[in-house]
Length: 196
Image (tube, rainbow, N blue to C red; front, side, top):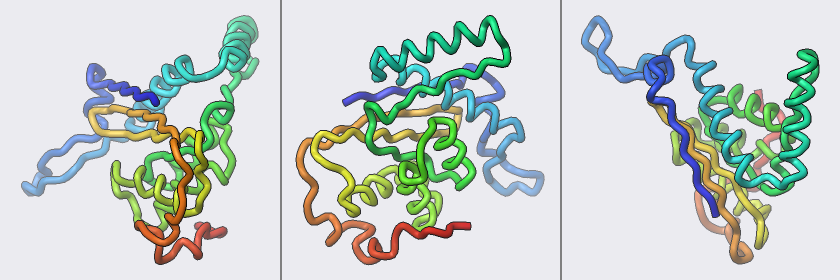
């Protein structure tokens, strides 16, 4: 239904936050800069802000605008976090690590149920880079949580720093997914309630 890509290669800190290079012994690897957390946060914030302005209903935009005006006059006033659940039913986030998934969920005001696909995918498959998003979608389909008309938001990250959002819409009922796909042999064990 909609795609959006934001990138921050123009900012040296963002561009150099994760870079492939040789170490002092000549081994090729990836260097992750200590400031990368703030750069990742800013890249995601930029993407989510633009996406929100495109897909959220006027009522959510209005609440956000009012909170920004209040914040301008009263620094202690909190900023309203728009409720993306009014237009999106399912969420697929990068499986880069449990803290990132939880931070994204908190930042967007999502429940444990909303971030369950990302956490279970991380548990079952680990960090599979961008393919994790498709394992998460398969999880939702196998659990038969996606219904005709539902919208799914896939949010992906990449080096250089870039952030991609794609909004998909289910156009037909999903039937029989529990018998095939990457979750077929183990879906009955998920969700795992106590993930440490």
